[in-house]
Length: 435
Image (cartoon, rainbow, N blue to C red; front, side):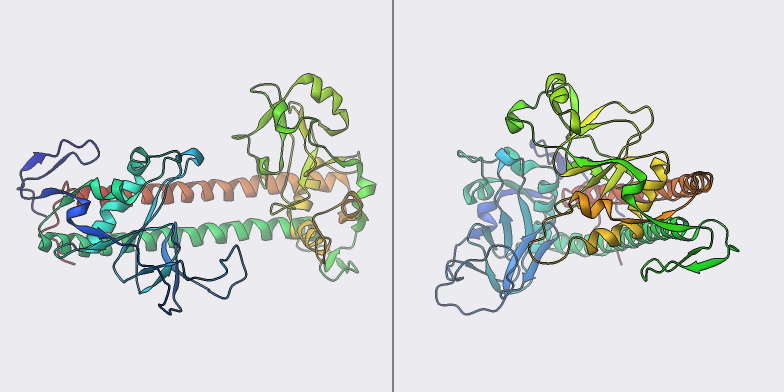
């Protein structure tokens, strides 16, 4: 690529230096803003702006909230730019998309119509760069700190000659597609690794570690065969406690900055406890809620909502926690190891029973009788320990690989964003690039 390029100072922090032959122009000289209402226009294309761009939406779908009619919706034409208003109060940032076909879209969106000599896709990349840098967040006005058309139209944009706009779009379309393909390939690899991990756990807690073990029919269709020396047992015979917490009197008003961590369903994940947004209660309230104290070696199990069935355990040297009503404490007795119980609940052995007990009209979650009735494999503790040790070692290897692949995705995303930013502001010269 050509490196003989001279720069000028833009005097704008988020742009920096730009090629000497490029200009800065406010959006109002490149776009017009028009709100064309769908009062008479008939259109089957309902469009929606998502994190992934402008997508078609099913007008007949009953999912989510739908208006009584679409007559107040705006008309959007192909190659219009569309923006979602920001709301700084809720720490949301604007989104930007490029419309791919004529259709109608929510009246809350901002529509920018490109003028002559403005290549819409080039400016989509530039606005996307501003979105990823949170620049829109600094431009909101009004009580809700929302971005409005005037803010957008006054924003300075980098304006290369039209042939360079076309070259930049060609370069970025090619390069970002290759990066996106790598990301997608890596994401699929991670999904396969997760499936491998689940399959491994499923096999070990129902078939054991000995591939030559004599097998027998368990009598339960979805469990299948189990080793001849194993049996089945209900969870209630393996536990000393199955119960959940409550919301403290006073609700969220009693939460404090430090104290006893108060776990909610969002804190309980497969493979770990997520404590980034954990809340705290005082020692006094913790003592008042003694029945929902979490102690070392408990298994914590979500029993309501979208995360139903997620579970994890507390370590032998764990600090004390407390839980609310959406989290069930399952305390193993001397017949079962905490980690073996966890692996059973994590596996299909437990998750199928979550589904079986959470179906039908009016069901909002699992109750304690449901959970006590869960069927687990009945295995002696020595064999439990062997299975736990094996699974700890093998799943750690898989987790390490997943972590590396996840980091790779983050690096690819960072590179993608950096590439877009550097190219649309002229830091990388692509004039001589050929596909």
